[in-house]
Amino acid sequence: MKRTALTHVHEALGAKMVPFAGYSMPVQYEGVNIEHQTVRESVGVFDVSHMGEFFVSGEEALDLVQSVTSNDASRLIVGKAQYSCITNDTGGIVDDLIVYRIDENEYMLVVNAANIEKDWNWINSKNTFSKVTLENRSDEYSLLAIQGPKAVEAMQSLTKEYLFEIKFYNFVIGEFAGVKDVIISATGYTGSGGFEIYCKNEDVEHIWNEVFKAGKDFGIKPIGLAARDTLRLEMGYSLYGNDIDDTTSPFEAGLGWIVKFTKTFTNSENLSAQKKKILSRKLVAFEMQDRGIPRTTYDIVNDKGELIGKVTSGTMSPSLKKGIGLGYVNPAYADFGSKIFIQIRKKQLAATVVKLPFYKG
Image (cartoon, rainbow, N blue to C red; front, side, top):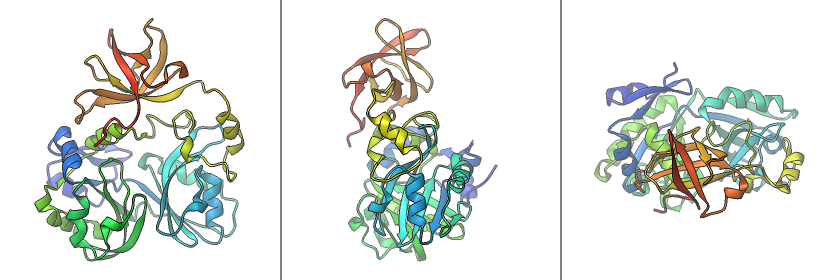
């Protein structure tokens, strides 16, 4: 079991540690609901150092990034990031990721922890460019997600960069908490604003301590992966392995907006044809009308009890105080307002297809 550079800190804080993507990770400290509301109302800090960081550099760096990702990375200027996905040869998704343009001919690809080895092998297998250097620096970097509506105000004292001026999906590389060359990125997986801080492993404990000193008067708390999951689900953000995987296409998953046919990428020709066809399933968001908590793999049925889909993610929303979920259904039941039923044990409980996000802030 791998450990992040902060594992001993989490253990000292009394976090409940669980295996996740090959790492020992904090799932919760005080409790999911408390930690969830901390991020919605003030500021919380996640250690997500298990995520992967690949660096692509050289004259043909953009060519490689364009060939393996679905979004159009040529639109990126230095200091901007982009949500994208890596497509496979059969129309599915190898992984979803964030592409950062670090310099004129340098990009950073941030991939999911469970997919680091798979993604690395896939990208290398597709690299037909001679003027590209690929580096997997996942074991060198730590990542802190400082999230919440008070994150900017709480963290401003740690940097000379004007945090309030960094727009969503933009980043700067500067000094943070006295450490140079830190990537300060206005990104996150919670929907409550804030930053993600990329730094070297040897600097992260110092930064962690300074972050908590700076945030003391703002109610800052450490947050575990369980609350990260409820926060992302309230926003309707897909989780790889649940809502998207090697068998789901971006169009089925509602991710057509990150697929650009202004260039050629893996399986782009077939995906372009698929875009024009009627899909056999669509990922929808739903709220429970009856009292119950939907869970991954639960059946979704119609009013006749006929199977029409499967739940991919579900929880009791801490903010809305009701069951919410995502799932793939027959397109006939994908319209907003459609009534569906979730099979929970022997009961078929009513739910309604809704527009995302669940949580409106």
